[in-house]
Image (cartoon, rainbow, N blue to C red):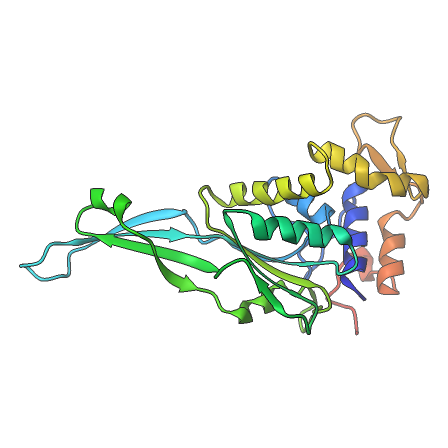
Length: 261
């Protein structure tokens, strides 16, 4: 099993609006735009959203003859994901992320690839001043720099005790402004640029053509309330599930935790 298999199954599930509940693989996160990332082959494994981007604390424990100190903390969200090694779009996406002014990137091409980084990944920054107003003129210190070992979080999990390392292992930190939703929006826009489309519907059309040409899917012209593309087989997502995992899900549940590798 390879990341390409996971990408293909996930893309098919999104196209056909099929339910795909996985216990280990995280196919979906509750952020607008995340379907676009998964759709493009960005296999998310973990997201660290550590709350508000900025917070300010006042410390009075400097003694009665010392002024209090004000500290501003900037917390950066992190996304870990695996990408296909064979899809040229993966390389284009990573190169665009490496050039992006807000993003800090650490990646490795496969299990034995060399580490590539845009700059140090900083999960948290701090700056301190004697007054709250003076904080804005103080430089940021790197309070929490992340080491190379974090890339294990980018290896997609296929069971509770197995990860895939034969992929682009990617950790991306957003050191700009905004919250996790803005972060996802930045990554979504990079993917749209890579595919040279204006919006998610344009991407949907671009990637859906091969499925329509192979007649795995067809346009839903009869039910305007349903999904725009529907499976062209009776068993829909179950067919793809059996082809990928080599067996049918037990009790009708599409879960990978019961698979014996």
